[in-house]
Image 1: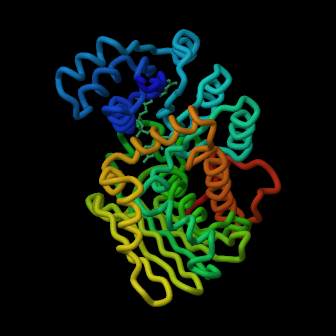
Image 2: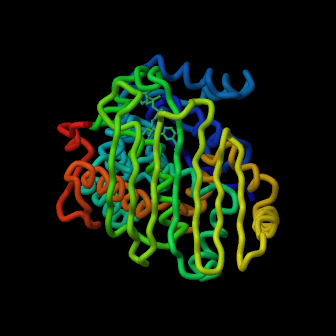
Length: 376
Ligand SMILES: NC(=O)c1ccc[n+]([C@@H]2O[C@H](COP(=O)([O-])OP(=O)(O)OC[C@H]3O[C@@H](n4cnc5c(N)ncnc54)[C@H](O)[C@@H]3O)[C@@H](O)[C@H]2O)c1
């Protein structure tokens, strides 16, 4: 029997949309790209031309995909099964809400929203309308990560002492200059909200806890922008474990690294990705277990599982399709979007008020409320 194709429409045809198009149009994805929307009509050609696809496939996509400059009209006309939202972060909330209310499941890029109340509302809509959300939290879809998470939760690493995440994702000034929304408190936030939110999501997930308190200091050292380019913070989780966070875009732009470390009573791991190359070092009771985890990954997901680093978005789409067809939750679900946004906003509030902040926050807070923050 032919596989059921889910119709996908994408809103926002910028840089990250290329990865989405590659994932949607991949062979056997079980997805059909039906439409794309962008307020800038020039964005359509730039998007398709930037995709590493054969001329034949590009031609075919251009001929079959309908383009819109008004996303509301697209949702109304196309009624897609899945809407992919790849617009500037400050627009995530309004567009995600419109897409779910129009009847669509969504793949929403990170961060889920720019305020706690918006994230909660999106979570509530997804529950009430029975719509799946898959967040663009790519790290949850990296090899080995899922099995590590299950094993930490099952106690294989023992009681957790602490975790640490380091995101050194350098960008030069031209990155922030290319579009007006980048680095603004209202539409982007700084390194915590943009480059770290999905890393914070992953470390809390791996540590099998939810953040209950936050402390942070922010700096703006190398860039001309509104928000921070260096952040140091700590979170306390509900299981008592502590978590340390370092995030910066000040490091060399050719040396991107996201590193994750966990220490438990019985073992621990350090893993990450540096210059596009993954590394793992997993130990339990003093013995190296890295190979065991790699073999397990290979057995369950095949070679494609181990190579999912090249386009983790393909894995997010496969997960969302499975969740929609089989009425399951996604790996990077609405809750992961909501919790990680709240953690980042608690870290911001802590820096602003120069004190420890309890999570859940006592009242709503948005990134925009950082606009009077003075770096000194
Ligand atoms: N998961 C990841 O690894 C990852 C990586 C990069 C970016 N992102 C996220 O993806 C989002 C987009 O980032 P980007 O780098 O592609 O940005 P971008 O500026 O390159 O692209 C955004 C696009 O959205 C379009 N747009 C703006 N307003 C619109 C509207 N109202 N309707 C339709 N289109 C509209 C713009 O014209 C532009 O083409 C951000 O939220 C970012 O945080 C995620």
